[in-house]
Image (cartoon, rainbow, N blue to C red):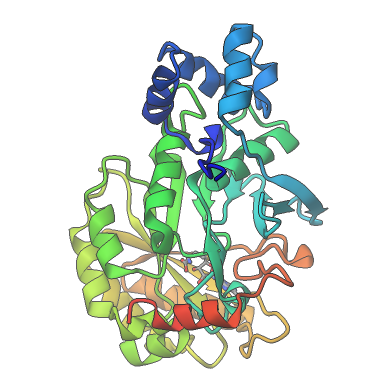
Length: 362
Ligand code: SAH
């Protein structure tokens, strides 16, 4: 019988695991550092190109390991400079990643899943259902591909985990990706330059609070009461607002950092002055700021974006209650790269997977 043993993927290994894998095959552990530099600093996608390694090691790497890199299937540029990348993965599934220039820093918006199970009422990605989790290698792979395509391997950038997927629903691979990104021989990304956005999966949030490598935290709130939130963010029926806010209150934060509460404004649904006052009261006492996101409308999304006046009025009321508030400028809407607009047609989950989604956390 043929063995089905899979070769380890260099893109998917943390450095200690790579050191161990090298040692097992009779190579010195320190080569892991060199390999990390080739992959993450020089953007090499083929072990044969790692020219400071011995021929013998290069042959062994090519034979005993893989190095998987997502492929750019399409690249679109918005009038505002935002670029959307459609990336093809090894199993031919697709995800999207977005480059947002000058906000004021350069930002990469990454996906953590193919699709999403959360089914938020106003989000296009939610329409896809969840097809599968991304591996850590695929999450970091988006950074490798974007840095290369944009000639930004030397340039500083921030990362937001706000693309397709719910990062805390793919906890282990997301955290592993953050550790690979932080490696001092790789991208050396400070976790302070990374923001993880979540609907607030309670057990995962509790666990996140204990992590040694801790990204900035953004919570998708979107409504000031459980009744309203349950309609917009279905998982709220399982993990309610009081518990989420309670974890946020206890969340260990750096001296200068605050939790961001994201709030999508939907005309006539959650944008009244009373909603603004209730939101301010809800987050009072949490070291936080509120980020208002006027809805990015799309065909099939049964909500409307409020007027600029309604957005301003909402922001003013929240601010008058002593809460720091900002309004997110929508970027890349003309190429459907804005928040909640990432969807890959033809990647909908199968009926069986949809059922698994419904059962999630049940
Ligand atoms: N699953 C994570 C990350 C996803 S998206 C989360 O929910 O936080 C990042 C933000 O975009 C979230 O706050 C999400 O609610 C918001 N968003 C989704 N659809 C949107 C839309 N159509 N218009 C504006 N923001 C949207």
